Length: 146
Image 1 (cartoon, rainbow, N blue to C red):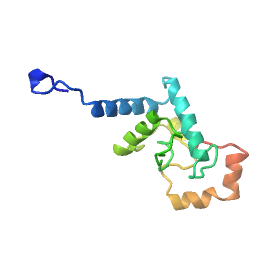
Image 2: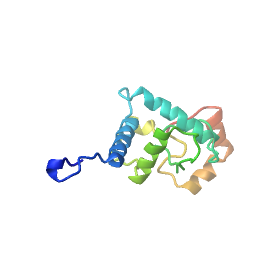
Image 3: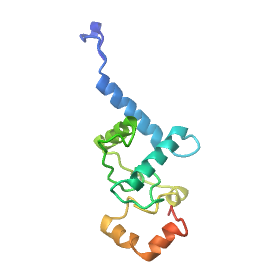
Image 4: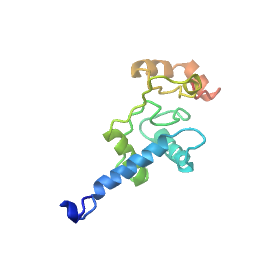
């Protein structure tokens, strides 16, 4: 926004404003711990249900957070997901959001998702995930984190 006194037309750049709002929502969504907003848990639930019932065929219970799990998230054209979520995911993809850390505390390491872990390459994951032991860990013992 540039005011008329600064040579502008005094018109808001709505596109940039909306993108900034989406990035702010994304920042709030990525917060973990007791300060996390209540709406973030609803977003987790909505995304988890969408991924478990979509063509991606992800087993129930594997998804903790789409940014902590290694998931290529296609944005559906249909109205399956709310428009705000689509824009938030689109902003994350546009700015190439990835989980990176220089040093991770041991407690945080143990809370990382076990299934579709970002450090595991896909062929290895696919081979291990389809075994009976992995199915047992996932379905019987309900193992979710490392």
